[in-house]
Image 1 (tube, one colour):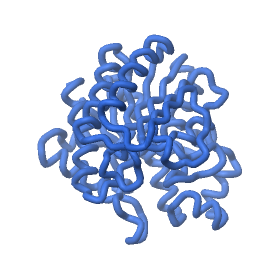
Image 2 (cartoon, rainbow, N blue to C red):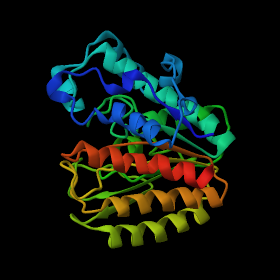
Image 3 (cartoon, rainbow, N blue to C red):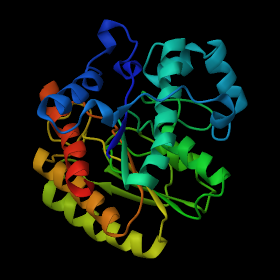
Length: 300
């Protein structure tokens, strides 16, 4: 069964002028239910992650500031969101969903978080619409339990996974792979285990050719036992914040290749949605829904 972490909190507790394109978190499950790709039983609601698990990844000082609402105006600006306890609660639920999905992926092969991909959150601060790093937290939790010897994080958002790279800079059991646009945020990139910076306005042919060769080699060389996949759709040519030029068909083929590669090797795959900021919300929703449709087709 395809298990999907989803909560009403994903809809985002933000002022009106900050909400677009956060409507996607409500529209995606509605669309999937309407078209029959999923049923209500596919959706589950994660709890808020416990403090002790978050502190395996994020510093006590940063966590304390979040809980007490003591971020400085500069730190708040860096996150891109007005701070609220509701926003923190949302981050805790997203992180727990990604961790829960490890168990579901072990059981069913794949599981998807209806939000997440908060890869700009560092150990000690948030930025770029991210305050807690869900994939990093989930990875650290399972490593702390000695459940895996090697984890691969495939980050295909248009923006580099700078926070994730910083968190696992000295962790040999996690291989961080980020393929992103060189001309996009963040201006100062961190160093992942493998970074591929694409020229602005690269399209489907260039992107897919590089990805297919690179990922095939990575899976053979690194031999991961668990894979996290950040499937941002801000790679689309229509995206307001991205500078690549992929089509929806190309984005779908990207997802298919990643999923099929993991499926063929029997690797548990945990997917987080990542970014998507096209002006037409229908483009965002359809591109994200393709990720769910493919997961169902490949595994179920």
